[in-house]
Image (cartoon, rainbow over all chains, first blue to last red; front, top):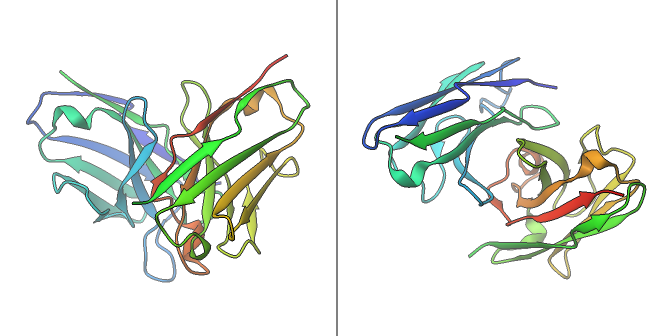
Length: 112
Length: 123
């Protein structure tokens, strides 16, 4: 299985400040179709996960533009340009270049 | 508005069976793959199974292969997970999630998730 490793595992951020989460995969997530199968999810407290970013850098419908995804190959980053109180929760990266889809351990983001 | 509502969770003894259901609405159910993903208490996300839009293809995590069966009824907009020979380590919140369209895309992601149903396996 493809192993996904996130850092840091927790993050405390002042509102209005930026935040960044790293995700590394054990193999390249670039498929022969030219797409990179890396996704970012946010699970707010008491809620199911919600899709933020698909194919490494595309914001899903309705996701604020303060969220951005970047990276290629095996190294990826989720950035929040200005953290808001509603951004608290656990962020997961997920790969689906091969079955089974696998998730990172999660990064818990809290507000200072 | 896409909506997924899971049901069927509960407390069950080890070795017994349980069937989860997921009612879908707000989209053309028969054209999308569907997933089950679970989350053990206080833990991260673990993908469980996926089924193609027409039900002809299913894939499973090794941890549930041979014990769980994913199925769907497109005439009723329903997704199911039959869970047999349950173990303590199957204790989790089970989410159904909408996948992608198309022969290759349906396994690639989950874009909308239900609120989940809780399964507890305990004697």
